[in-house]
Picture (cartoon, rainbow, N blue to C red):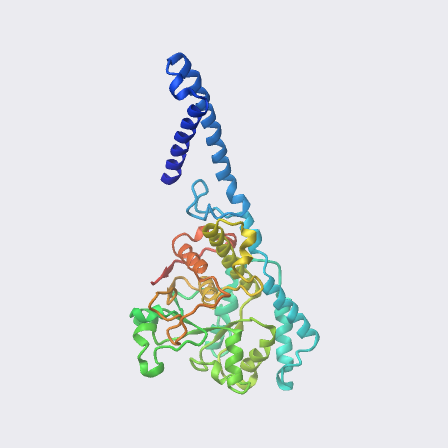
Length: 406
């Protein structure tokens, strides 16, 4: 705001000087009776110019600009959402391609599946396609039923608890543990393990692995493993089509997986089949949650693109390959936790020049299909001003307190 006012004052001085010089009045007209009409004319000119500038600034967000990001824009307040960015965020070519491929696989009866798994895999695929409903951020209010209730039922030995249908209580507290190398710079292990539910991502090792050397940094407990289905597919392939290597935290830890490809319902069937014995359930994220996460991240990415480049939001695809762009597993795990937990703590999200991308691998580079900086902006809003988050604010769901440990 101060910079804008300085620019406007500077412009006023330049216009006044130019007007005097162009009219030849700077030296020739010094008598008050001649100067007064000139000053009035210049004042009217400056007033007109100032009004034009203000009008242009106020019109800028409607062109898909991020000049008015939620919470920071003068005159828009914390709840401002750019309608153009929201409309562009609703376009998801990657998800559309996955759905088309899924329908083709179903039509072909998922021939990739072994005969003993085909019925279960086709059934899972058919149900998943049938859940591709209209966009519904209200899914947040259903996540306790969709995620926590099956886990509780498994913990109770499959028995329905008395009053289960009446009570929908979230976990009191949840820790979402990311995989960033920044975790190794802190000793949050005991704090992580003190939560009711500890969620880990894509089978990153917990503290008991490697002789317990990681425990003081990443904790040792795991209550839910969040895997994208690419990880599920790779670990099942390593196990010869079984689920042995997919349960990195033990058979008793439930898995929540996001379906990157409909083909992976084969691996889902392998991990969910009767042959898996008394192993914990392998749940699939509701497609409405997938769509909600997709829109949120793309909105923040669009806003960041316009703010940093000054280019129209419609050109966002020149920086990101739209057919591949996707939110990260960690982002969806955080949103899911917000739906099933009374309080959420986030660890191991972020980067540092001296840290590896993942604490448990030598990888240093980031994946191009994610916009991590946009996701970090989302986490900051989730922590400090959740009412500003587009789409989530329309869910009718009250978000829990979120703390991001950096």
